[in-house]
Image (cartoon, rainbow, N blue to C red; front, side, top):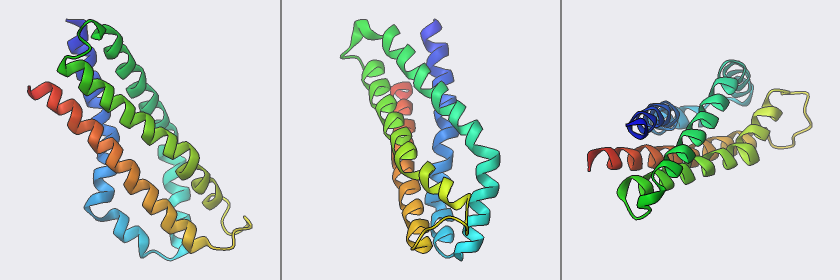
Length: 152
């Protein structure tokens, strides 16, 4: 009974996380590619100041819930709930790792635009867009995987 409630909460949190990736797939990423570097920097600064802390908390909650469901369902390791939760949790881990190693350092550089000593701001901008799309693949895969576990 508790497992179902925890799984449902995990699904809700992953829906919120995946919605960011879906938004970028729908067209925001393409629009971000066409922004001038100063506009992109302003956008990143403004968005980062509002959303970074909130997303950080949601990612940690999603990871904690995923691990909790894995522990609670470990008696049925070959079962659909365990396997789907494992895949979803690993996808969220990959999303977090890409954020920590790629997206966040780029955000930090853009937070200091134009003072930071960066030779290719445009290249950095395009790298950020590429990373956010890759992260979106992982978060969307996590969501789809969790939905599969609920539908079957």
